[in-house]
Length: 418
Image 1 (cartoon, one colour):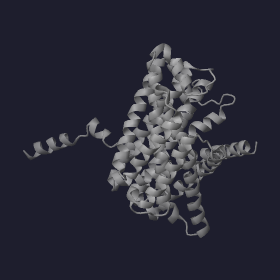
Image 2 (cartoon, rainbow, N blue to C red; image 1 turned 180 degrees about the vertical axis):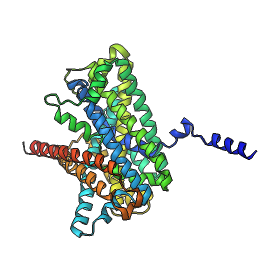
Image 3 (cartoon, one colour; image 1 turned 60 degrees about the vertical axis):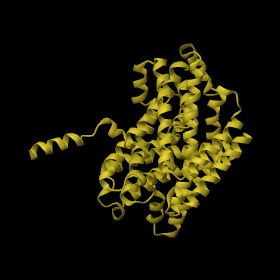
């Protein structure tokens, strides 16, 4: 009888697909964060300009994101601290300590504030196409909705909203890719055989830059603490990271593949060009599909920008009450107000955006290297430090990010001076 009971227990505890999907949470926030209007536009232009030739850049950026985000999640679960706190405590030298703290806070703060208006306008563009209402009217309205979500202080509410938005984006963009009937042989060649067609380097940097986002490391290391609390939870956290970010990669790839199949060689002025090319296949639903996808991408990214600024600054300054902290909410409000006013006025501060781009060009490799240093700190992580394999792969990713960051910085400076 005892043996039978033991067998029954084992059978009952076998995880079902539904139970496995229940682990999706913090990783979904990261995915919803990096799939924004910038990603949709960049992937569309990449496909239109180069077909499937630089699809490998999406594959690389997703692998890089999974590797770095897994480290961030592991740090949060094992140490019960965010990446900002870890950076603050890593260095004894006051110059290194405060230099790294202020670089992170200034770069992430300005970056999030600079991009929020574009995220809100991107959110509005989809609905504006369907309703005819100006994006400058819709932008502030969506901004107020996001502001209220942030002020709720509810991690679970934000997580659920992000998961719904990912489902909407997945259905929209993957369906359009299937309908476009791309050449599968060319797709696999573009995904796994790296090539650099003439003039594609900036587009490759843009694809990687819209996916591997520095403030997402801070969000992830903080948000996993809301869901998981012990080393045995690492398996679930890894599954969440791999599945969520892979879905994000599939969405980005689907947009690029659809553009490569439908509008290769066409000069793209906006994502609306993609809906025009899909009209012969989808009819009047083409505009609806693309508009809904763009709305979901914009809304998720617009919610993540102020969240990223607040989580990063809160983590570096060791604010203890998370999203319910008044100072956290104050940072969230400041970034959102900037976005609401900017989107209402249609103001696109080019110099600020270029400055933010330059700062992010410096920040990504710096954060990647800092993360690697922290993940090898045995005093902090004990036996959960990086393996040799993780260090090699992470080191390669950091090296590539450094090269791309320098290129991006030089390009931003040239545009600024020119």
